[in-house]
Length: 585
Image (cartoon, rainbow, N blue to C red):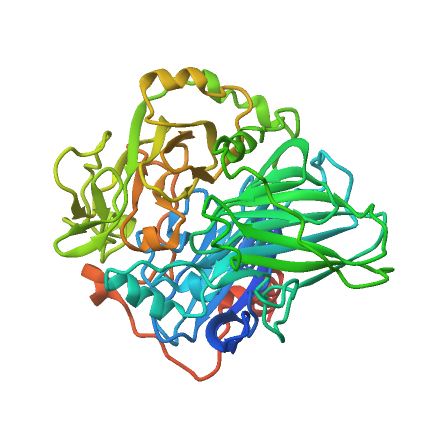
């Protein structure tokens, strides 16, 4: 064997061992329309591999995830991995400001490492209001076996996607918004893509398929619940059972009992539920509308069934009541404040979560972001953040940076709300790399809002009613405020978050309320290491898509009638072995 072959084999062996510690997980997603009737009315929904909701992604901390996406819709598509931090690779975040759309009939492969994360998340299509038609699914990140978990191993791990739902598809809803209309009350709530059990013959018609979760008596299960809906906060409860809160969006919580919990749009929680009731009948699982006039919104209720294997009959009678707080607007907020970070538990790493002393770090930048009811700008109904209605760039932010395309965006997002007339702009925040940013989210609208930050887990340190002032900092929780990626902001109230800007890239800060997001209530935070020779951010992937000012760089893709498989779907070990055989022969 000549020297070249020996050296090449040594390289292949070393290459293989380099990746041995961080395995790969592979998924193939074909995104298409199907007809379904979740609320008894046939409608077009977005399915993945023919299923609605889509399959659960189940990986382990530090694994490299490869998702090959085949777009069989009639419009552009991006999948966003909500809560996955995309360390050093905002190129994979799947949003209009980070990626060019995957064209219809095209194949595109996402590849990223689930670095230093654990917990419960979900994914969804981020363009064109598509989430209102489905395309979402759960995303689980398990801890490595060497990291202790602060509770005993459950009997099972169950994912539950809840969300408000319209019988109009996303294109009809989008047109209503484009025409300056409000979407109105949703037609119902789905649990895992299914409508309500017929607990009431007046409110629920015959023939609706409902979700049933089968469990063994005496066992404890982990329920991962995500609100994947459009704009409605939901109260989640299970008749006769306590919910022990254990984790939220990647952070273990102090374990507390709740009879029900408000889950706002975009949020995810893990509950430990022990099946300790008698089996005389099944039990209701309920997700009902919150922070609205609940008497009028009675139809906006999802109902599933918890079925013990030895159950003797069907669930019957009235649904278990939600919080009786019609005249107490502080109940839900106090419940949210009660959720605390488990500072002694290990997260994705062996060191305790609380070893990061966020409360003692000096803040470098402060931004007050205020939203108001929709306004007219240039004759169009729009939503705003601090007086700016965001216009998505035709060329993604970091792609424009890489190719030195000027005029794509402005680094001039105001630190305080504008005092003049609102305007439509691609205005983004100039984040300080390794800075520590305080963001106050002020909701001056009459409807509930929740906000999400890509790329990070921020610290939820405070919330209250009224206008935020400098004195409000005296109420902050500087010790065990939970680290998460989505926070609720009550009507006429504020929420404060702290963000350690250690992840370079362009990161979306948005409302999760889909209608408000679609109309412009978002911005991006651009975080760049000023060292030109830095190794802190990966470059654009080899399969990067081009659009906007860089459209001419895009090479055509050969389109076939069947889904193509990316090279990423070949096992790494098989690739190495094939190359070895080529060299030896």
